Length: 124
Image (cartoon, rainbow, N blue to C red; front, side, top):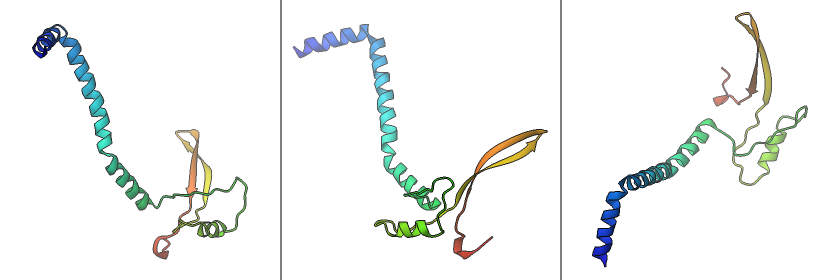
C-alpha cells in the first residue's frame, strides 16, 4: 500500500510541480517572517530597557491640565508616596510656537520646551 502511495505522489508531483513550488515558497516566506522577529525578542527587550535607562525615560507620567497651577515639588511628594517608585523627577513641559521668516515667507513651527535637572549640579 505504501508503494502505491509513493508512486501516486510522484506522479501527481510531476503534474503539479508549479503548485508544489508555490506552496513551498509561501510556507518558506511565512515561516521566515515569523522566525526572524521571534528570535529577536530577547534582544529587543534588552535594547528597549537599555534605551530607557540611557535616556532616563519615565514609567509613570503625571500631567496638570492646561492653565493649572501646581507648586514646585508637589508632584514629587506625590510620587514619593507611591510604593514601587524609587526615582522621580519633576519636569516642566511647555508647548510653544516659533514664528520665523524664510525666503520671504512666514513660517509657524510648533515645538516643546522640556526642562531637565542639570547633571552633577552644573549649569552649562
